[in-house]
Length: 178
Image (cartoon, rainbow, N blue to C red; front, side):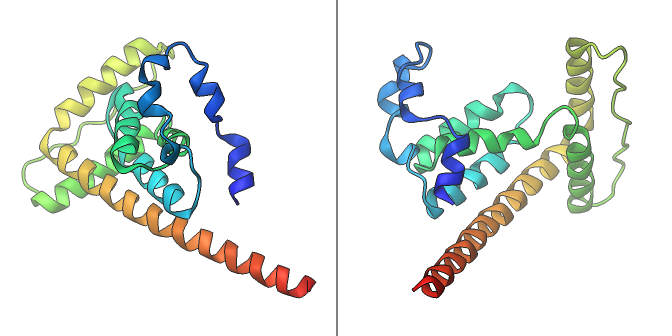
């Protein structure tokens, strides 16, 4: 599994040669941020799932900071944050609003529909989306935290379980070849 994942992830040398990342090289080139095993992969996916619900372009920066703090695989966490994108962010926020409404008690929280993709102008749509998200307030905030924590825990367990099943399958194949 490690070989399969390493094909898709950037390598240590590409980061060290990047002129924009050179000032952070001592932190970003720590070996544990690039080592790939079931612990670092599960932690990275959990970090990516949690930070993927951070609003705006701060998702990857939040994931990078969490990777440095928890010493989990940096590239995998950054890639995992991409599950929330312009196509999925509105359904995720609607789900978070519903979860927040359930937790806070269905008080007088009114749901306003998300903005339409008028003319596909990204700058206008992102501004409208930010205004829409801020108008939803407390239920959205509570729902985002609960949804992010739930997705993070479930993904951590799924990666650990999936990696374990893959190892067992490889052990059995190796035993059959002998």
